[in-house]
Image (cartoon, rainbow, N blue to C red; front, side, top):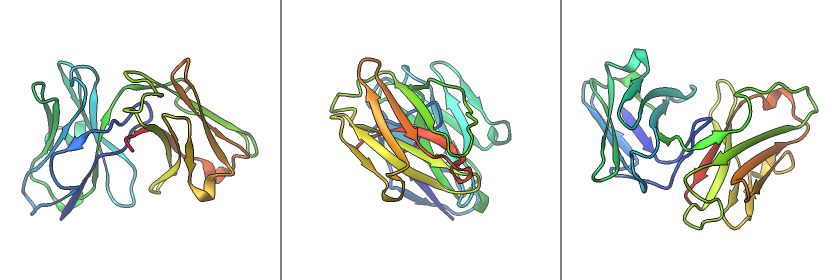
Amino acid sequence: MSLSALLLLLAATSSVNSEQLTQPASVTLQPGQTLTINCKVSYSVTSYPTAWIRQPSGKGLEWINTIWSGSTEHKDSLKNKFSVSRDTSSNTITLQGKNMQPEDTAVYYWVDCNIDHTQPSSITIRPGESLGVTCTVTGASITDSSYYGTAWIRQAAGKGLEWINVIWYDGSTAHKESLKNKFSVSRDTSSNTISLQGKNMQPEDTAVYYCARDPQ
């Protein structure tokens, strides 16, 4: 059973910082063993909530748990399998899973919640119309070289994650070749916001759209 622990991803109202996993990118366990993933962050772990999510192959994202400044919250069906803790002296967040089984094989993601979505959680548009989604970044300036960049990612139902584009701290951008004529990305440095624009949207563009901090 191979369990892959990845560094970079975010959920719809969250961001991903350029942090460090303290073990290899993949972990192989025997059924019944314990999973431990540590992530060392560059800011105080008391500053923002931190969540763990996972994605089994060919399936959608699944929230596991969240640790707040003084409490934790867990998905009910997973609360007896996974726990989350933190070490404030080393600014480390730890996910532990017990009695791991083949069905727990997944990519495990760490998420820190410090980007705000500035529109409803769902948007309905007609075929041919434009999409506009904006995220407000908090806790860092989008022009700071240490922040680096913000990426947009989407996930259609039943499919994997698809990278769309990224805008770097200096205003330069990069795009997925097949999507560069459909989507554009911009920023407003006065409000510290990043916006995704999509034109001529079609039913096949129906998806969950994520904004993520790209470390480099």
